[in-house]
Length: 312
Image (cartoon, rainbow, N blue to C red; front, top):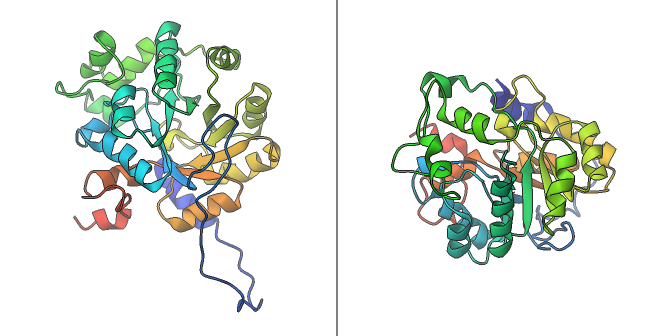
């Protein structure tokens, strides 16, 4: 499965170590908390940030706020999903000083997308992260088998009425897939990037780039940055792990825009490898959720290593 490919691929990218090089001058490792980012956005942040997982209320109702508070305390970036159980305004109120970006899907009804963008701007979000690898969702067989739907006590926080509860029912399979099929625009092309840029002044980050060709198109169509991502390895099976795709994309981009990566980041050495292969920052998803579901102080104990949970 692709998920194991993401985590396992880090082990087949070992560091190339040269020995007997007089290391007496070396100081202990230290990673700075500074970085650069596209114009008009926040200039200082850490090298590891929050990915935008959807419907985190399934873990517990406070996970979304835990993640934003943790990001605020750590001085890093929090990305809110369009289909979160916490709204744009709720997150802005809970973490007013966090660096907040908004993950976006393009809906068939463009007024829905326009409204989301406007609300994110008003709430002080600093960038839009457009997911480009999921106009249709992959065949998530366990979701279909279990007829996954959002429990009745939860709703999608960014919407009202049917848009907030449509995911609470599954007619023939997965309620999530049915939501996506009925509402997301599967006809999206590169020209829609132009449209999105025309309705906002926020920097646009494209999430879901896996080839040098698409990275070059992202530059051509005005993206401020890209995320090398395979959607947590749950979208298209047998595709490359993100760290495998990163090096070629870095060479093709050649410094013209910033490159970020997500997928399979579980420990510090995974971050180091991604940075060495050209990423300016990595996004972390699952470990952040595991941590926020269990810790007392999110800012202090933001991530628990997955090995901890294997003993619970």
